[in-house]
Amino acid sequence: MCGTENRTQLPLASSASGCSCCSTEAAPAPTAAAGATTVEFAVDGLTCGHCVQTVEKAVSAVDGVESASVDLVPGGRSRLWVQGTVDAAATREAVTAAGYTFVGI
Image 1: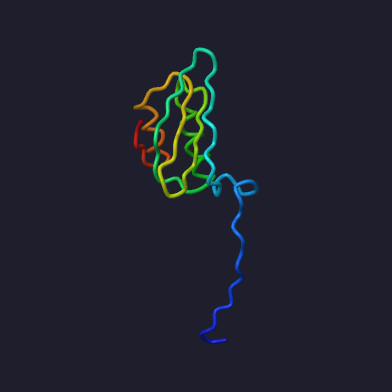
Image 2: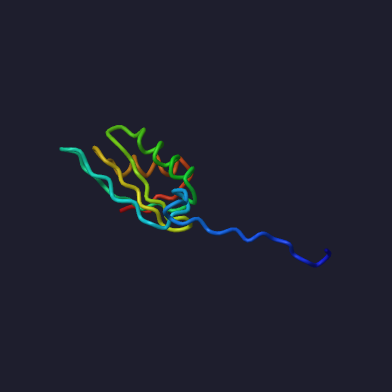
């Protein structure tokens, strides 16, 4: 078999059955609780569901943040929604400390 490739062609997962890191559909924006503010930021460098969980966990640990949610765009600019009392500088620090690029609003 020298010089002959023998590969199995696998079908791509559809967005209906694929995992969150492979889906091309945008997630709906989270809704804020009464009195809470929701701010959207852009983040680069996320490629999979594990990246999403890492950023959400890091940002959720920031004082005043009620929740953090990421709409993943693998290899592109992902959207990060932060609810609560949002401090952009603290959010930037959390994202960069997690190993990703905080682009801003």
